[in-house]
Image (cartoon, rainbow, N blue to C red):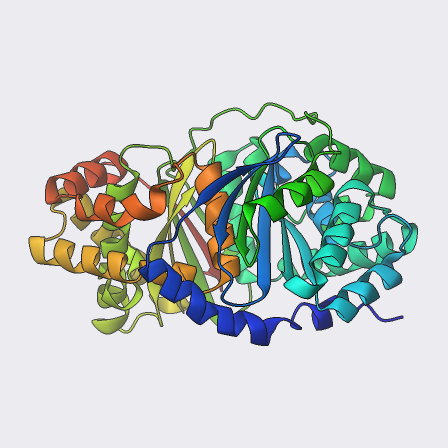
Length: 441
């Protein structure tokens, strides 16, 4: 039987599109977040909304791909791909056929620091959906046939990455900045490490990661706190209290390398790596505004204006903050003709120096803050987005009232704040520069 995941993932799209409007309007009315604690002590944050009969649950566990053992890179990603490939008495085909029949979506994914899961269901099928989720979380099968199928898919993707300019650039940047730290390990693994993984390896990683300690849960939709409590216990209470995580050290990335990877492609891909900031840093909001002006604002940023609009060097140039638990980065990126790659890098470095030495004007700061605060509701235009935000807030320990505080924190950022954080992160810093493309010179 053909693998049906691509079909079932799009079944609830029509309903979710309608919920997008609801999510937006509810944010405008000030979303009320409730803290719900089940009889067995499982905590979740809930936004109750009975406008439409749909429920979104997102959750995460401490520990992600940084927990992959040496030589088994990709095992956490493979765990995410196989956790819903059969559970309890249902083999893979029967489990996923049941999901399709009920129009229920269950999915899992991983980042460097955390392992994620989600559930989307209509209220009439809530009980069956919860049973399936509880089975996947507590009784995964990891049968040979679906494991091999998912391993083949990931291995194929890993092999494609070997000739992808973006993937090569990202891997080169991570290797240069992270060295032997676990963050340097590719989340997807390599073709070689994936091929060596077995169902035993996946189960060992499952037992290592899925535990109640530092479990975070966000729920949005047509469900009350009293209805949610027994669901939390059914899905999560059977898990062990603690996993078996390896301690991950904080990291000071290495900067200053210049790396060119030769690849016969039409354009050169450029990545710049600079110091960033962790999410719990008091300067985070100032850094967020600074990055928006520098390269995060797409059509209004300095990078876009100078690289594309004035010189036509690239279709776009941008920067982004990447806050990890144990370090932070600011990444600049662009793609350009090979013969203009050095010029593009020089222009990008000029904007970084400009931000570090002069900073933005009051008018640029005002415009950036207006955009950032005005566009914030777009993060809440569906129940799923709100559920993900609830989990993100808990993971970053931002507080249950963050939705109410966030825009005022952005508004409070001053020109002095932006100039201070720009100097802190960018002044006299030599970035790691990676280019991937045709031979230079």
